[in-house]
View (tube, rainbow, N blue to C red):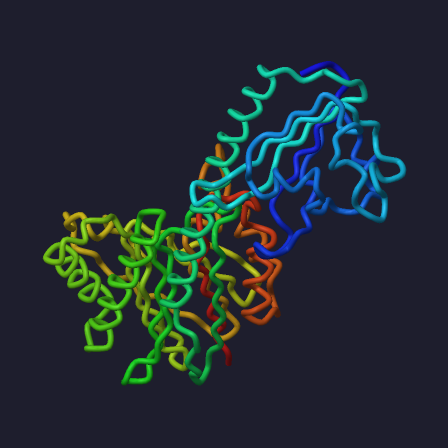
Length: 378
């Protein structure tokens, strides 16, 4: 392209396919301030062939074209618009023939753009269409996975004497495909509280579907009366016989808040963190020993651990999406959560969830967050 031309790239429509307003998406070789007071482009006679996807338009001098100056209210370039004589426009068209936008080039002198320039811009428009369609497909898959994942999470939390529970599910940022993270809370027939956070490896709709299968299987075994370690072993057997050979980490606990007891088991998952009534925040790594992940054939049977939870204790169960930061050791991330948790004394579980997500999670994380907070009351 010749030096000094301005190149506004008009992006997607503002509304549906009948909307004739287009949004100025990007500029090169011209300040955006030059277009600050200029209305959004309309499907005027000069723009129409591009907005209808009819093909490239290359003009030696746009001011001499019979289509120029026919549309009100400006009848030509709006006041303050950079001068344009040479004009080149190419539509960006999807494989479905939907016009996604266009690439528009202008220059203040006539006769600037050549046939070679036109071919280059046509190639660029083709690549742009492929990229936009790819992004749309990615967005649709992401939205479907997030919707499915949220649908599989419990909508209502049970009420139990002596405890309050809050949960959060936060999808990964930047449209990264969602994974198989989940939480589950249920009131068992004997009055105890079942608490689970888990993560099925994978990052697509299938991972969310497998998550639903694993979650439902664990819930079924727990509600059938199996204690945490036995329930986890049976889920592993179920996954093997069902062909669900995707590594899954789980932290599952059964709590008796009124009695101040918690029995928990974990398979290659982060241990719970606790905030004690005296303000000490710590991780229950030794109290609740780890076992290999389920879904790949347990080589070591999971072993449950029991801990006492006195009144005023906060228990935090989370997937690793809350902690992980690129290039940072997990121990450093765990220390960060401990520091933030230590400042949560007196806060209700919902406020604790909000604080941990806001202050511990990486805003540019590439994994989901499943978070569960239990407050033991007196």
